[in-house]
Image (tube, rainbow, N blue to C red):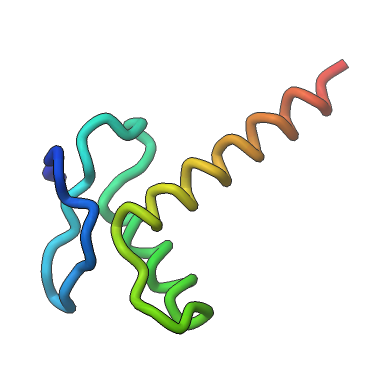
Length: 72
């Protein structure tokens, strides 16, 4: 897995995913790729790597809140 500071742009088909620097370690190149594969068909314009990372971060925050609210 490769991390780089400024790879938030659009990914060309076949181009390897570069995980942006500063994202949590649980966000991997494979997870970004799977996110793009699942969500891209639902968007009229190509999603960027930055948008995929933002989606993952938002879902992570949602799960964090849900897990805190279900604890006694």
